[in-house]
Image 1 (cartoon, rainbow, N blue to C red):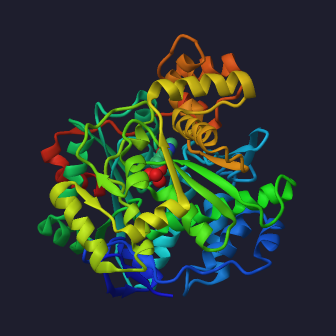
Image 2 (cartoon, rainbow, N blue to C red):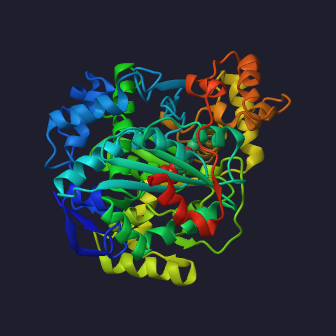
Length: 494
Ligand SMILES: *Cc1c(COP(=O)(O)O)cnc(C)c1O
């Protein structure tokens, strides 16, 4: 199976090429030429397996040139060894009658990015080997919080890699900062940048396009790479948990094989919900894909009108990982809905770059309507949903998950469609303690103290990786101006 660029079908590569190099040379996203189908008995076969075995079975369908035993090794490193605090890795919990939470936050950083970022380093290093790349991959990340910590935990002590993370000094929460500055591992580096997230991100972009630095690093045996969410190696592991959740619902007798399940996903860069679309395309009986946004509702408008327009105010919300105006992974959906019409997709992406707006064809609008529903909710309604769901159903949610829960409620009220639904639960409520506490009517407490306050109030234990922060040593204290980031890279590489 080949992977093609969304902007030029002739730009083809193998899956290892797609993962090793991330973005196609023309700026497009590598996407499978054809999506494989689940065999007739696959769901029954998968239902009898544990999470790691399911991941091997499913990823193997996309990974030509990788052996099953190789994948077994990756899956036990990524999902075994006690890295996830639940043996199901991505457990499904019943919230009420026919609403289920797919909990994606049982990994080392307590957010859903762990499911992909624990796997990516293994896929990446193997892909580099298969591509004949002998140098050490130096992963550079600019982060507004969750991705940086997720990447640090994923790449920590993975042979053949270094990982360097830049975060904005005043742009992350106290807990997020402590999660990063106490990071363990012999191949990691963390550095604060004076300024906001854009400063850190444009600094990293400048490093990537600095030919002199590239040459210098090559001489020292390094090449620069990214752990960006547009890498196919991050989308692929996410397909697994949707199929796994369906199998768990079958096993629990909540559904029969073949029953449709709606899926509601709190969405930012469109990576998580795209993975569910691929699962559906493989043959998973998914009904509506419900895309939930916060006040940054560019996707709600796009999915309901076919017009993508980023020319609008940007809001900092209580669900910061969804504060995004350009959802990069959407390009892969457009590729699929135009049957791979690269010229059309390229045209829209160029228009987006030029004017911030594009309108898709009627054919694409029909396809959007066939699969997707969309809604959004503001911070107040999300907070109210956290309080209500806790009081009435005894289920504690973080603000991202709350956006999806509220959008699902609205969807059901508007359509009367009461099909069983999975809500992607993307972060532990403890990661957003102050917001959750205030949603429950308690005094908001900040920093590490919020863990105990939330735990006392609800009786829910603090996840171990967060509780452990209190005893951790700060290892990284460097702060640099945004024009000194290149030097920081040199320094961290020693
Ligand atoms: C990244 C993130 C999201 C958004 O996921 P996308 O794949 O970017 O759509 C939602 N919730 C949380 C907690 C996240 O960290």
